[in-house]
Image (cartoon, rainbow, N blue to C red; front, top):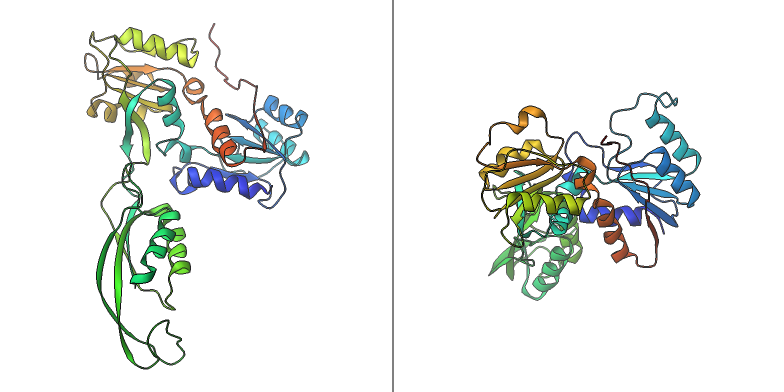
Amino acid sequence: MKLKEITNVLEEYAPLALQESYDNAGLLTGSPDREVGKVLITLDVTNEVMDEAIQQKCEMIIAHHPLIFKPLKRLTGDDETQQLIIKAIKNDIALYAVHTNMDNVINGVNGILAKKLGLKNTRILAVREDGLKKLVTFCPDDYAAKVREAIFSAGAGHIGNYDSCSYNLKGEGTFRGLEGTNPFVGKKGELHIEKEIRIETIVPDHKLNAVIQAMLEAHPYEEVAYDIYPLDNKNENTGAGIIGEPEAETEEKEFLEKVKNVLKANIIRHTSFIGKKVKKVAICGGSGSFLIQQAFLSGADIFITADIKYHDFFGYEGKMVIADAGHYETEQFTKELIYSILKEKFPNFALLISEVNTNPVRIL
């Protein structure tokens, strides 16, 4: 199949528009139109992973962390990143990254981590500030169902755990086709009154163009009237981190021992135990110290993340346990997630999860 068929599935699940401004997710090397027969999925692109892809005759590597992160001014092989890029190009291996865009969807990196830890009643910890528009359009009564179906299929109408949400109001529209028009109803040059349905729905910013295109294709009118309103509402399904409840209330030490076992972590750095039951847990796979305060304000008893600096452990003594379980450890299930997303769409396609442990951290 074509490479772009694979990336389209991933970008439908975790749109590139959701990546952070500093990130570089997406296709890094290779043509979207090239044929791909086998894909290797990894957390990081290393020499060992590249050799594995070559040995397995893979035409594409999908990684969580982008190999090309900082801007490149030259490609001379002066460092490992450049050497790996050259090696990929020489062996005709496309490189693709699905990074913070996968962090920022509720069923992404943190969603699978929450599932592995047995958290229930989960929601986004820090919901994105931007993200929603209201779309309003008008169409003949007989075509309302077709237009609604089209815009819902393109991604409109999601509110929390509900889909196909819209408000519909009957009314009358007036218009007169001028010279050069070919009205769907009425006669050119004559004022026409048509019984119409006003359809209102909600659309995420990153899906707005696709929804509008779907609406235009399904709508019978030659010129489609529609309005787009900015909203202060937040998209509850996008943002950083997740907060939820453990399967059962446990002691803090017992819960962290479970985390250590599930993640197969060699060590977990944490603040002092407070001595209360764990009823609410906040998590953020990878570097999540920027969410410590949000975790506390959300009522978390424990916040689990990685890459916490010494001074970030201060300030919440006796209030919340802060735990650093490791960057690789908290993101390792992303490989499994990417595999499952693609396998569901392409059950007979050759997908491999890398057997290389790319964790660069060792414990003496």
